[in-house]
Length: 521
Image (cartoon, rainbow, N blue to C red; front, side, top):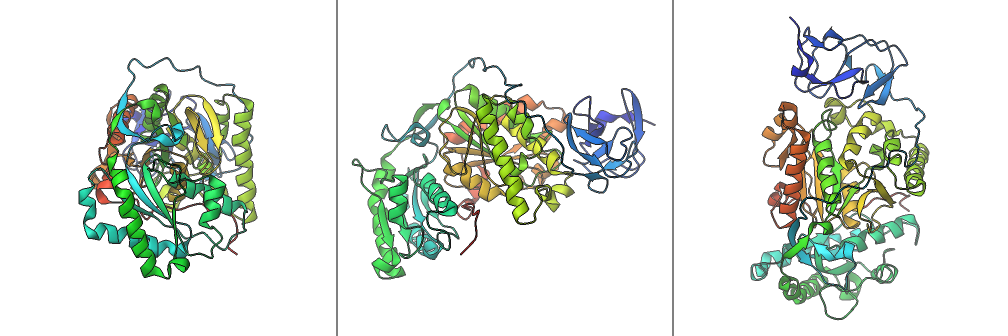
């Protein structure tokens, strides 16, 4: 007996020759839909695809009305559509710069606010308005990473932070880079840009720099090249710099670091939350541990929230360039100009070159977990990923960790690997982040709070202590718009101080992961 297709799967666009399972479909299930019916040849797992018609060898497989791959062998109606019968071959995309550029949004019916930190007019707007209040200890090189961590641990262990209730924490920014790179080469400049982005981040009230003394990334070069000053002081002073070699070893550096932190804490604690317009929010978006329903539930819902942020006059940032690949034409058609669209195309071409140098394929991006969740090709993953960007015009494209100064929807060139991607986006100034996941990522990214959205209800129920929003309700009848507005409201609440699940767990100190693009020398 046939049952309606909608009980088991969603047919996203009329042109699609597949449907996506919203719950497991047993083998031998007959599903009816306008124009015909199919019987599943085998069991289809949630998030996976089932063919609605014959798909001959070489014919396009369509999802979201777009190409996600090509049949590698004949696919019969009712057959499971996945890596065993679909190939990701290159195909021409029509970039048509600005052809689908949307009209400007109407003003919102209500201008919203959040309770955040105004760092004052000495900071540019993209570095001025914070949602958290941290003091950072920034390591210039891996050789000073442990020392930087020891300073933070010593301060925490002393119990002194209880006397500074307005301080969200003393945050060590440690990493595995800082030397073994070309002096003033791409990696050197990019790492300094990333470190400076965290030093000047709107959620960082003050910081100190800790180095070894003989590394490539010298604190003096970082200060001069990025124009760094000490935050939280009335005069424009250079930041405190400690080097292990000059201080006389780890122990003396830790002592000096603790003293420097104690000197800054009163200034950090003095700042208070004030009511600020939502236009000062810079939203960082990311997806990780994605599944076949990411592009059906969580990502489109985040796209609604992204549009609402932009409508308020704020900024939404989309990263993960390898997860735009194959869908970049959808974004170039939304570009405000050919120049902006070409910026994105140039980054796509660079990634084709970059991966070819190492004998890699961008289509290798869907991880084993992604494929287990139903994602077949990078094209499918990308089309789902860009849903996070909403529907507004693409106003600019930024380099990794470059300060994001534009208002509206923008793209930042980052890798697809989540910690590296989010590090660049936060360095660019994102003061609140939303991370969607279908398999169960537990990511956090201090100093920016990170809201996590589950794509399906089984995941949310299983990992409720890590998930902030259940977008799986969309598969059960709740509208994408309703969940999108829920995410928007949670963004405002989080910006005002509500803790995310990752913050409750204390996640976010180990996840600072700058992108290294060149050789280690």
